Amino acid sequence: DADVTQTPRNRITKTGKRIMLECSQTKGHDRMYWYRQDPGLGLRLIYYSFDVKDINKGEISDGYSVSRQAQAKFSLSLESAIPNQTALYFCATSDPDRLADNEQFFGPGTRLTVL
Amino acid sequence: AQSVTQLGSHVSVSEGALVLLRCNYSSSVPPYLFWYVQYPNQGLQLLLKYTSAATLVKGINGFEAEFKKSETSFHLTKPSAHMSDAAEYFCAVTLYSSASKIIFGSGTRLSIRP
Image 1 (spheres, each protein chain N blue to C red):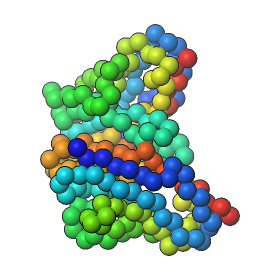
Image 2: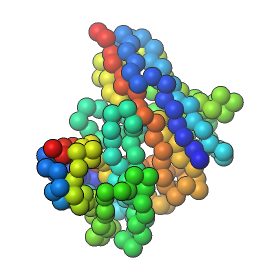
Image 3: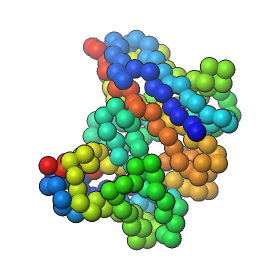
Image 4: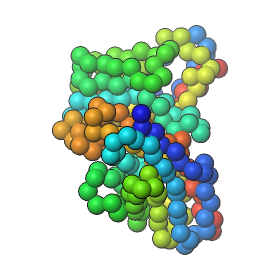
């Protein structure tokens, strides 16, 4: 079974709709992240959370919000989706006890298309 | 602030040939460096990492990378390419004090010719 899962894997929606992408992990990690991937731009950090009560903006948080419902769950919401939010979205986790190397573990991704 | 530059958005090599994917970093303090691989329709998987131990780092699937401080480089190599190596490769950098934030390069797509 995958350690980091994302639902849905694919989603097509219309401009103005509210969308929620969900991430769950069984690794027991406190730290979780949301990235978006666009061709030629690599991965860019949207939000990150170090525990349930600690949520931080990344470099491209405008237009997004997050919720850390539990240690194992971290959701990303698009309140009013727009076409330039069409991208591949990844959730990731890391273990604070391994801060020395900062390795992150990624989910399989959610492909979101906003029409 | 740290950054990563990957030279070449697309690299094509013949099966059995040397693979060389270039990565240069910018950091004011010694960084930790990573190479991740993304196979089609999958998430990112760690290939190898440099964390200030040995400068030559060996990873999975026969890949290795050498940290060269004087050149601020961390190029990824594999002596003999295999068809299964076709994927997108990302170089990434982080600092011990950066609270787990990783900065990714823009990626290099590796194609293997039969």
